[in-house]
Structures are given as structure tokens and as C-alpha cells.
Amino acid sequence: MPVEEFVAGWISGALGLVLGHPFDTVKVRLQTQTTYQGIIDCMVKTYRHESAYCLAPFDLIKVRLQNQTEPRARPGSPPPRYRGPVHCAVSICREDGPWGLFRGAWALTLRDTPTLGIYFVTYEWLCRQSTPDRQNPGAATVLVAGGFAGIASWAVATPLDVIKSRMQMGGLKHRVYRGVLDCMVSSARQEGLGVFFRGLTINSARAFPVNAVTFLTYEYLLSSWG
Image 1 (cartoon, helix red, strand yellow):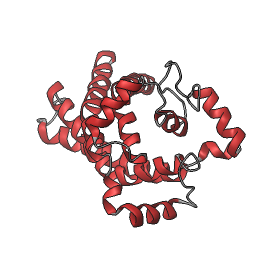
Image 2 (cartoon, helix red, strand yellow):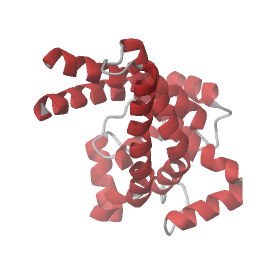
Image 3 (tube, one colour):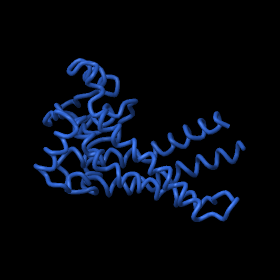
Image 4 (cartoon, helix red, strand yellow):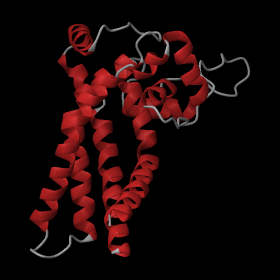
């Protein structure tokens, strides 16, 4: 069963990533840039000027690529800073050294440690509340429980997600922060406490369908192989 659970988790997670990636791009740009008037404006400008291009093994590279706003393949337009994930990784190592790839890693750890617990506890609790004893949850229950579990986890994770994204963009047309605390204090002082919830709406909009599909795929694969 551990092998089946691993494969089911991998497939469902990959499916959720593909479904949620465009929303994640919009979320990162809203958190790190001030040129957009809102979610719709960001989505329209991103779609109009470029493709949703960003597949990278590191969260830092993902954020850097998502923040590239130069139009691609347009005559006379400036070339993008990074030509792709590998070029981005090499450029970061050349400019900041190997440790540059770990910029924002501490904020990422602080973000994910409590939210993963909230994520699974919320899912299990909602499934149990909606399912009779000794019965497996139905598809509708799994979809709703998975969706709300995603929203609950992102409601807690968004403040540190903002900090993580800003630290990862540090030194690239942005100020360099001395650490997590310095980033939090500076952001709050300059933009108010509301800055820590920037991107919460798009996070929630992305979280429900992505995690609903993720858990449904996971449960379906396990039941099929069981």
C-alpha cells in the first residue's frame, strides 16, 4: 500500500500543480509588484503580453520566472532576464553564489510547517463530519472537503507566502532584506498590515479547485488499486 499511496499522491499532486499554476503566477505578481490594479488586471496583462511559462524544480526559480513581464518574441522588445529554468539557476549562482538558490527558504519552511497540518486535519475532519461511520466519503464530499482544506491552509499561509516571495525577489529590482523579520517589519511599515494578505483572494480561488481535484484523484486511485 505505501507504493500505491506514493504513486497516487504523485499523480494527484502533479494534476493539481498543472491546474493551479496560472493562478499561482498571478498570485506571485500581485504579492511582489505594484503595477497591477487587481486580479483581473494582472490576468489580462499577463495573458496579453506573454505566455504562462514557468516550470522549475525550485520555488525560487519559479518565482523569478513568474515575475518576468517582458513580452516574448516581439520585435524591438527587451529580452527577458532569464531564458528558462536552467539559465535562471545558473544566473542566480553566478550572481549570488550557490546559497542564492536558497533565498527565502526559511520563510518557506515557516509557511509550510503549520499549514500542512491544517491542510490534512481540515480535510479529514470535513470528510468525517459528512460521512456515516464505516463508510468511505463520496466524490462530492471529497471535492468539497479538499477544496475547503486548501482554502483553510492558504488563509494561514498567505502572510508568510508574501514574505517568501518578496525575499526571493530581493536584489532583483527590489530591496534586499536582511531576514524574515526585517522583511515583515519593512513591508508593514511601508504598505500597512494589509500587505500580508495580498494574494489571499487569488490563493483561495486557486486552492478550491486545485485541492478538490487533488484529493479526488488521490482517493480514486487508492480505491481503484485497493
